[in-house]
Amino acid sequence: MRLTQLFTKTLRSAPSDEQALNAQLLIRAGFIYKEMAGVYAYLPLGIKVLENIKRIVREEMNAVGGQELIMTNLQRPDLWEKTDRWDDSKVDVWFKTKLQNDTELGLAWSHEEPITDMMRSYISSYRDLPANVYQFQTKLRNELRAKSGIMRGREFVMKDMYSYSLDEKQHQAFYDTVTEAYLKIFTRVGLGEQTFVTYSSGGAFTKFSHEFQTVTDAGEDVIYLDSDRKLAINKEVYTDEVIEHLGLDKSKLKEVKAAEVGNIFSFGTVKSEELDLSYTDKTGQKKFVVLGSYGIGITRLMGVIAEVFADDKGLVWPEAVAPYKVHLIRIGDKASTVTEADKLYNLLTEAGIEVIYDDRNLRVGESFADADLLGIPHRVVISDKTVANAKLEWKKRTEPEAKTISQAELLKILEG
RNA sequence: CGGGGUGUAGCGCAGCUUGGUAGCGCGCAGCGUUCGGGACGCUGAGGUCGCCGGUUCAAAUCCAGUCACCCCGACCA
Image 1: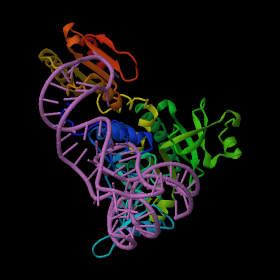
Image 2: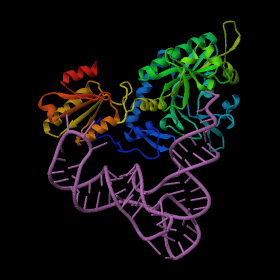
Image 3: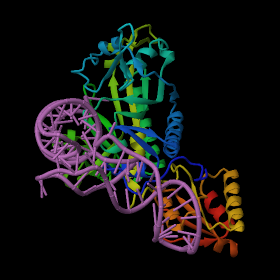
Image 4: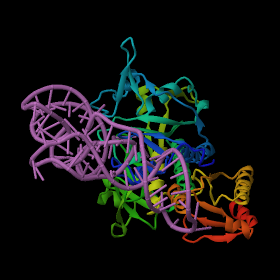
């Protein structure tokens, strides 16, 4: 992508109505646009990050046997009445609307009920289990107060997976597999070092649920972390009893702020009983399906990555999620320089390397500042100088100094 | 939902106390000089001062209401 073609622009200062670092930087760099409090549009650069995150999540979900689908955002009240979650006093984040004939509808804040109800059409025998389904879906939640930029909006994208198992044993095995898959995902997006499995409240169904918490001051949660065991306890359930139950040493637990990037739940058979999702086992007996639910906030994850890695100059994307791999800057507009820069842009692009090409012919300071702000992993400069000695200049976003190297060396670095 | 704060040009802000018909920086358009870390000069375009009502000869400025936004708290199976 040539910057002369990209319709978004960078802003020198952040809009005054944003305090959250992730939103400030993402807006300044042109990744997102704020429509209203807690509601953001995702622009070309932002979509590329989201798609990269989704690709990784999708690969790992598929790897554990997840099957992708897309539910609808319009929901029937009767399903939620069955589980007593339609009433605003029970779930206070509902957006509700009506059809023209006055039929009430809910706008999806979650999909457990509809998806589980749908599965009744496909699950009737033990032969149909297990079944694990997931989607990337927009959730709408009427939060009392939106905050923290894209880390907590009223509209956000979530990957939610639901597992339907024969029994507790099959469920637990899958649950453990997903735990591992989640850790892999967070490692792949670059957050492996600061993301921890965290024991949290389990709701009405089980003693605990498991959260995946990324340590960052931008987070809204407080967790007690044992770095050696890579385990943490959410403040919600932080008691001596729980510490003992988990075999942790209270003196080694450190209180830190963290952002919840994933959450997995066991529902047992409670929900399948409420919604009547059952199957016939080998002996002809009716059994209820064992449920699990597994979420990752995709847009929140993008915000957390932005927060965790940003420096005073701007965003710093890990390579796996960066919108582009290379930020090519052309300095000077001599014909030979333009030719060389264009050639490199085409060469890299044709090699399947994603390049954003600053062909705007600005003063260097501005181009460099924008490159720092956008946070693309590799910065490459072609200038009159580099062309004269048949080299180019390469710098990683995370390193302070540029190096003069040959094109062959650059290709090796980018492909290696 | 409780508390605090803010709405003036695309963005960041001043002006408001003490009413007199809107200004600065950046950005944008044109010309020229510059050109390896956000250059400079000249010219120009751009504003329902959030909205509604009131007071007044006169309201960005005072009063009342309302909407939006931000922060803290509560909330977040």
